[in-house]
Amino acid sequence: MTNQSETVHGYPLFWKDRYTVRSYDADTEKRLTLMGLCNYFQESAWRHAERCDLGYGSLAEKGQFWVLSRLYIEIAGLPVWQQPFSIETWSKGTKGLFALRDFLVEDDQGGVMVRATSGWLILDAARRRPVRLSSFEMTMPFLPDRHASADPLDKIEPPKKPEKKGGITVHYCDLDLNRHTNSSRYIEWVLNGVSKGGAGPEKMASFCVNYLAESVYGDRIELLVDRGTEAGATTFISLVRRHDKRELCRACIRSAVGNG
Image 1 (cartoon, rainbow, N blue to C red):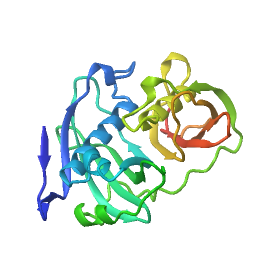
Image 2 (image 1 turned 30 degrees about the horizontal axis):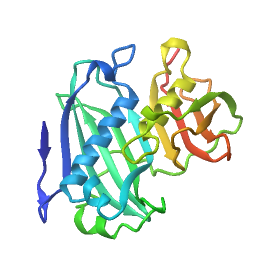
Image 3 (image 1 turned 90 degrees about the vertical axis):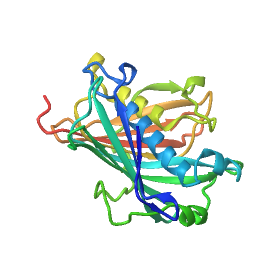
């Protein structure tokens, strides 16, 4: 179910979708996985952009495509298997080369479960470089004063005392329609790297990720972790391509106070 808001020049100010947690998006505790949540974020963002003539097809005609560059998520709770929930998303405008977009996840009673803010780039498909956002500014209506989160989307610090936690090879199923690794795959790799056995990662208060460079089929990647050990501490993670030592992704996880 999709709800469109009031429009500006025919383009919706915000976009709202209703989803239900499917079994394949639930973890061992029946909660929606962070990877599943981010896939829903991408879907709702794409639907809004499509309605504003800035979706995949419109950009492909210009030899361009969207990429997620920065994402910050505040987690009060996560919906569970079979639970319906809604995602509302809107554009906050631009900051340099970034198109800013926020998300709210609510239960059926209107309680806020997740708040998120993000920065996106439009890349030139041939040069793999960011392009100016002139067309975006012309058609996407903004809500610059409405903030789901106050996080400024700053760069994440690199791990200070990184320990190697294994290696990853990019396979076919890791790729998306732009022929590079899907952004949710990095989140999966990060969470696998910090999880404790089959119990999964500790309960998170927040999750932040910066995407620094793309990876493609066959790339071999090292996962580096600087783990916080106290409740409320922050763990820093870096994913580095092995052959050229290029850092591809940097993430941080703040654990919830009260974790055992």
